Length: 359
Image 1 (cartoon, rainbow, N blue to C red):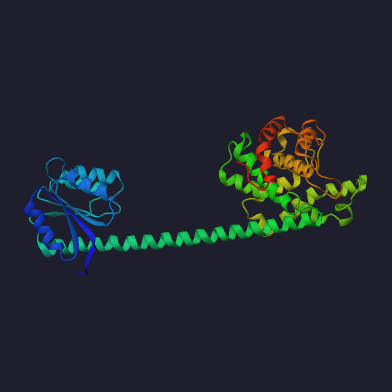
Image 2 (image 1 turned 90 degrees about the vertical axis):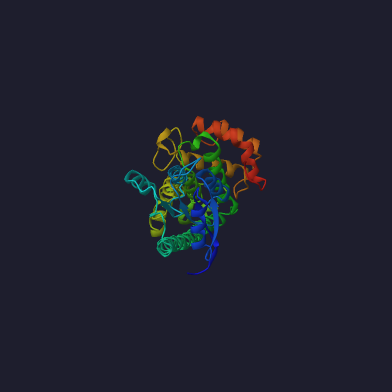
């Protein structure tokens, strides 16, 4: 046998002679700890949190706490799957054996023990558990590596999406910070207000990512219209409005995007972030709760950011002025519940524009 004295075998028996016999068999290869009753054994296991103990050799009939109660407590703590336990007993009643095996005992060895037999039987199981633990560690390491790789892919996908969306914003003469602010506002509104009720953290993450792509359809709008400093003609405005439909079509044409968890949100937001609560928006004339809450949030975030930011056709408004314009309906009709939540979060959202993050 190899030297495994960094591992511990716990011998539990009220007979000092029995403990000495078992210790003598395994002490050349393992560190040995002893307990003279079940309570002392549990104290040792709890103190060590089962760390480093590779096997428990357990008598059944003992004072204070018997071996069967030790098994029940170890099973309740989930330790039986990690530590092989062997009953070494003269009490081999059928009822005892059935319960012991039901609780997860690996083997029952009758007293008096035959040294080479008990050594071989116990060492074989310890080796099996050792190999299983090694395999489990390898699997956990591989799972960690796979998770890290998946996170890198997610970050890469997010980076590509942000790069595309930011490039479109630059093309329209806006700062690349616009898409990031829309993301942050959307995330805050869904995380910190009642508007996100019923959504999981993962769903909120995907919706916030989808919000970045709200204006992706502007890639199809001619520069002369996209960057016109003055008011658009009715014909030009119709072309501009088409960026909602074009955005949805563009997202549908990207195979990798269709497989992305954010796709359904991205398509909905790109197509419907210019719908209005009163039904006078575009392109589908949706009204009230026909408009998803995430499209509504991106709509008000887009309006607010446009007001407080300098654009080719206007100077930036002060935050107070922008909120007043939204409240008075100068920028379209919004869900009253959405307005209440947005105004309630306005002070926190302003931290986004100060270079921080809302709390």
